[in-house]
Length: 302
Image (cartoon, rainbow, N blue to C red; front, side, top):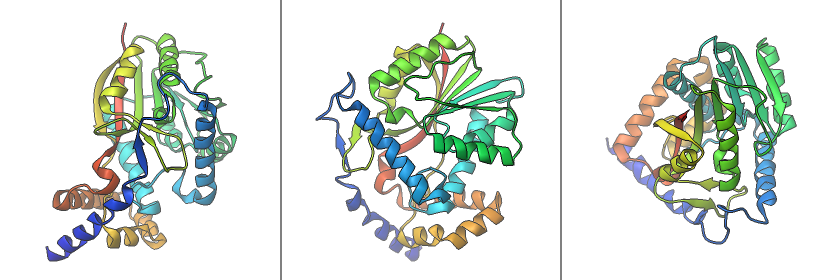
């Protein structure tokens, strides 16, 4: 017990490093468009391409807890498992994913459905996704290169998945996208949004290397409502590995990631239990206090 209290105090010291990285929206009108909009999108693109090149083992996914590949493996397992519980995927349904990246969701979901269309604006990401799905002999996936601002569905889909892209879009572009999807989808279609949200207030990235809008739950729901979608449920996509420094360094080493991968899925169940214990003992710290990765499940209104 004393050891855990010591580790908790260490973790709380990390909070100071978080301050100053973000700012409340003030100097840029992101709701009505801005002359630097293209620069914002280019900045985000260059950031994620750099991340993919420098840390390819992270699969283009952020390890918000700082636990490296161990956290990425755990996160993907937990998010995939959770989404399959929230949404019914079956061999009669077609899926459209916007922001497919390197194909991690296509690999997880395509085997469950009739057809899967993966859309991304990055050709290198699409090339990686094609190579991975080819190795797994997944032949029901269509890849398409397009920006979400310009993409118009050519057919109707049963499920549309916005894969972590909404926080990178200005409000007006997000609303236009949602309105296009509303016109293109059937009456029983399901729309999934996986977003990073802020629990208290709308903020923009400040001293970060990419443009991003962290909206509140209420603000995001209102945008979808304005486009004609009704919220069915919202749940956190996975429980963060919110660990103190010593544990974080241990989990982030490559040897630990190898052990976790070799002993899966039991290792993921253990990590989930560890995350629950750590949160219960000293509560969320750092970015985890204010941010959450959530699944929003919507249906199309009449």
